[in-house]
Length: 422
Image 1 (cartoon, rainbow, N blue to C red):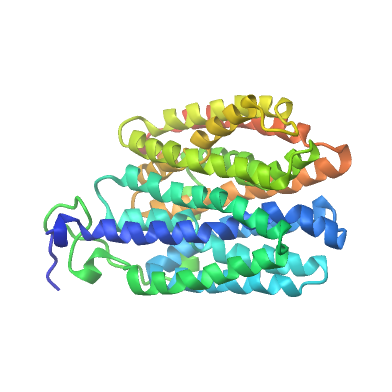
Image 2 (image 1 turned 90 degrees about the vertical axis):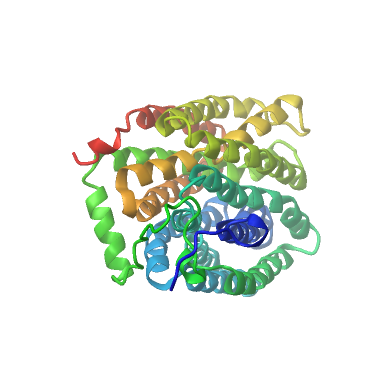
């Protein structure tokens, strides 16, 4: 096949079309990650399950969401993005749709915990990282920021809709809506997504003419994922990146994403209003994450991470005093700031993984992202227990803020690429 470096019609490189399809897919899939936050109170009211029990299902989901990622990255190398993402969407549809039949808490653990966790983990941030690695040489930081914003923003923007469905027609209708949305996205992925530039006779955006791209891996995906982990685990940057990203997950998906709505409800705020505040976080996240991607191409990414984590920690420490039955200006200021910072950490983390680990960067990021979700799972479950035993979430907010300050220090300690081996 003769490779062409010329742009597609209208002067736009094919990479931008692929990125657009990936963005729509990630945005549409984001509702799958939004649902648990709006189900905690309805499930507690109908079945009498404790916040800790429901949070355990969320924690299983978050762990699998993260630990599936490195294997998904390797599977995408072996079988292609289209196949992996399409199968993942079918898993999500099954897991979400079957929840309407559940009668015991273990059903929730199996369906939302295991099936949806595996499905969402297979199309998590490693999907964005893989698209960027294959299709872009220029603008990698910017495109990473845009795709990351699509996932996080979509997740939060869907919350008000799902909250209204859960309170109106009921939580079962919300679950069926998510299942239907997953099925609708499958044809979009299968017909429009392309795995590599070579598949359509072109090269990655910004690649030098005649540049030779690495051939698709034929190695066993699980073996490659574990081999890459074993090599990365012998390096100091990996543990600093993974540790910091674990705290990132604890302070976003695990704590705020899962427990902000019930925490606000504890202070008299209506759940749709609280969900609307999270949606505002999603809106400002677009600005913050895209800007972070642009900055990651220009500023030392470890410095960016240090600033992001430090400011996030300070904001969490003031959050307990901001909750009220109505939306006060001080809470809106927090929401806007947290939106700008929500997943701004992702682009510099992806850049660092690529710089330090080269061709294995996407798989390494998969493992780092796995640490992110382990941290999120611990926070989700721990905050639920805190609420059950202390009657309030205050301790969880303060602990997460302190950990973010630790993550800031860890990020600044990350070495350069030449210090990869220790």
